[in-house]
Length: 285
Ligand SMILES: NC(=O)c1ccc[n+]([C@@H]2O[C@H](COP(=O)([O-])OP(=O)(O)OC[C@H]3O[C@@H](n4cnc5c(N)ncnc54)[C@H](O)[C@@H]3O)[C@@H](O)[C@H]2O)c1
Image 1 (tube, rainbow, N blue to C red):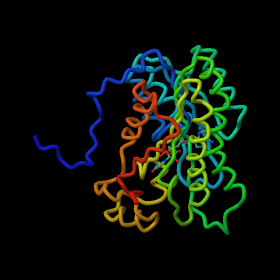
Image 2: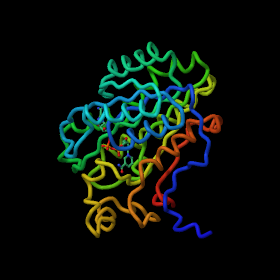
Image 3: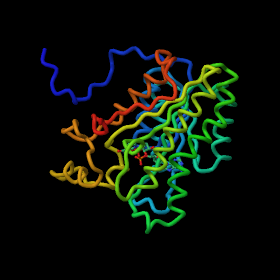
Image 4: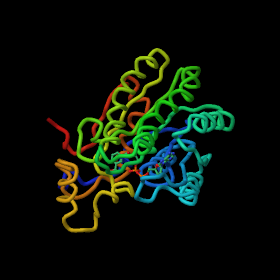
C-alpha cells in the first residue's frame, strides 16, 4: 500500500496510550496547542486541568485565548467522560500557579503530568523593545515552567512519579531577527530541563522539552498569513529555514500532542532532560 508523503500527519489511533487514572495539568489551554493537548490526553483516559490567562497581554498583537474558549476546551474533556477543572491562571504570577496546583491536589488528589504550554511571541528589534515586553515574554515562556516545577514538583516527589513537559520551539536552538526575547526564553528552557532533570531524577520525576516548528495556531498567524499562496516563502524570509521538509504546510497541533503523550507515558521512563525537536529537520546541522 502506498504510504503517501512522509509529512502527511496521521493520528496514532493504533498506539494504545493509556493515561486512565492520571491527572494532567495544562497551561494555555483555551485554544491552540494546549486545547488539543487537553482533548488528546482526555481521549486517552486522563482527567485534565485546563487553565489559561483568558485575557490580553500588552505587546501581543494576535488573539490570545478567551474565557469562552477555555470553557469550550473543558466541555470537550467532559464530553469524553473525564473530570475537568477549568481555571483562569496567569502563569507569570507564581501565586496563581501555586493556587492552581493546590486546587488540583485538593480536588483530584494527585497530579501526574504537567504541560507548561502557555506562551507568547512577538516581533520587535532589540533596540526598540520596551523592557516590559522583554519581561512579559521571559516570564510567560520561561519563568512559568519554573513556577510549575516549584509547586507541582513536591507533590510528584512525594508520589515518586511525575512527568513534566515544557514547550520550546525551533527558537530553543537557533536565533532569528526580531524575536530575541522569545528566542532567549525558549533557549532558557533547554537549560531548565537539563538542570531540573538532575534534581528530579532520584524521585521518579522526568522533565523534557518538546520543540515544534511552525504549528497552525493563532500565534503563528501573527507572523505570516497562511492563506496566501506564498506563505512558506514569507515564513522562510522571516525566520530562516522553517519547515525545511514540511513543504505542505504548518504542523498540526496534534503532532505535538503525540510527542507529549510519548514523553508523558511510562514508555519514556528513562528519558529526562531531553530536548526533542519536532521541526521537519529545519534545525538539523
Ligand atoms: N505556533 C507555533 O508555531 C509554535 C511553534 C513552536 C512553539 N510554540 C509554542 O507552543 C506553545 C503553545 O502555543 P500556540 O501555538 O498554541 O499559541 P497560541 O497563542 O495559539 O496559544 C497560547 C495560549 O497561551 C495563553 N497564554 C498566553 N499568556 C498566558 C499567561 N500569561 N498565562 C496563561 N496563559 C497564557 C493564551 O491565552 C493562549 O490560549 C507556546 O509555548 C509557544 O511558544 C508555538
